Image 1 (cartoon, rainbow, N blue to C red):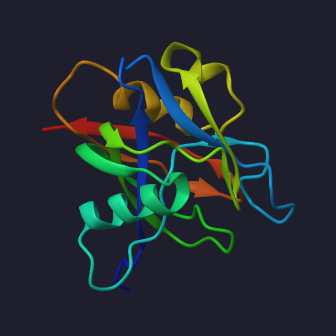
Image 2 (tube, rainbow, N blue to C red; image 1 turned 60 degrees about the vertical axis):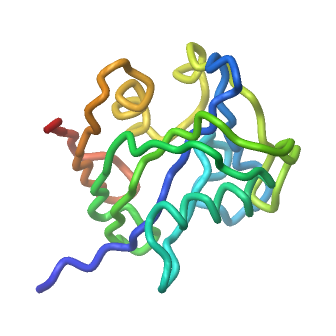
Length: 162
């Protein structure tokens, strides 16, 4: 059977001094599988757009700002992550320059600037604790990980760098 994951982006917007990151606190919809968790910004790629265009569109829709400089930090394969066990393939970006003023909230929740060194204190998906250090480390090489999920729980984690 061919592998047909949902393709998506996940972006982390840095403040101009690079000490804070814009996170969404998913606290608006009671039916949200992410309810109560903090996450980066992003979403599903649409037909006809490339992955960078998807990231720019999602940041504009979710935060009201325009990406001026983005870099790919890695890719993540999340087999079984979706509500019904769907597979997801994510492209992870850092946005280190933007224009505009971020919105305070969107339909998913509240947008909050969080110190990068306090990210691990936030409620988040268990798996995020494994890959977030790679997003913000000093290694210029992108990481490429796989993190299978079953029944809403991470089963394992591995990654490589080229």
